[in-house]
Image (cartoon, rainbow, N blue to C red; front, side, top):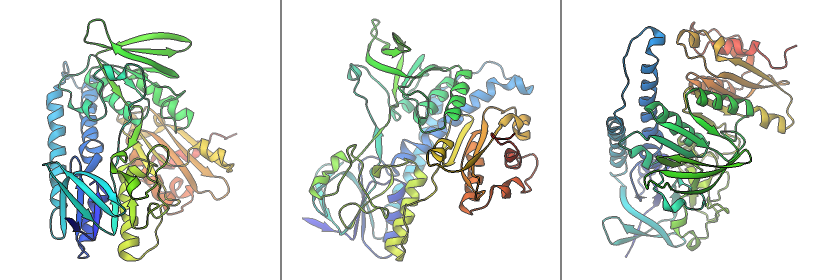
Length: 464
């Protein structure tokens, strides 16, 4: 028997979690289908748990630096079981709150695996057993991503970790090998180094964080090396296997013209993400995907089938919770309020939660020059910032790209203490279409990190 709803939401990540309630408030009958946990990646496997553990790593880092501040702390020990439990408690709280939001008047949450059996018909293989079949004219797909497993000889023969399973370890690895130099690999690498593990990052590209300017990436690499992390760039992983002792993992790497074998106690795969679209049987609907499985959408988030929308990471593009939430706002504005909002030309911020943070907004210098724009670049080390000096957190630099003709800010990379927060101030100026001089000449409290936005614009890279 097919059950009729006004809207079906597949996945309960940031976009659908909020959208379900908004649609239900209009009196429409809404069902959300979730295959794993209420709240999606962010609450369960992404932002919330990782940043909770990053915070524990920072406390360990500061405790070891106590003597630098005149504070004697003694030997530092890591109780990873307690770190893990703190993470679990926070995740459980968020998951419970999301579950409650998805059940209520006009709202139903079903746990199970969804797959299309017709253009607007979905069969649910229930977690508790059995099936249900539901149908609606409006369907919203928000199924997210999972770790991509690279095609490497022997990879299936070893017990590798991904971004989810590594957070369930009860002991600090002796030597953590990481395949991938993106934000997942860097955040976990620095975190576990601070917990006491030896860490080696193996990256195929010529720089970490491939999308960043070379000077930003190089500064990140220097910071990680300073923290005691081994970084191998332009390193091609040829094979993975078990060590002779039957316990450790060996990774064969081609690097700098040589082939070498690295031995570690644990292996983390952080070599990209893949969309959770393959189990949906999209062929039954006519919804198109690209060659990587990302669902194709127009600028209003509608797929190739009218009435079916894709939100969040599964549609490709920047895979961040705040982007998913903005997708919700676009759908809400257009479908519930008759507006005409689009994802076109929206400003996309993000922060890489290494320490110091890398806050990013807008164009990189490389992107601006590739577009042929007439630009100036302001760049200043964090060692020029009074607040950073006072807190002894002077690693990194600020870099802001300005249009020479309009004097408006095109983008920024803030690699420094609370870099994400400083970048947000720059973003507000960009969204208000302010000239850079508004930040240069603004009066900010002293000594704050925001005050650095006065001084950075007196440090132009093209200054004579």
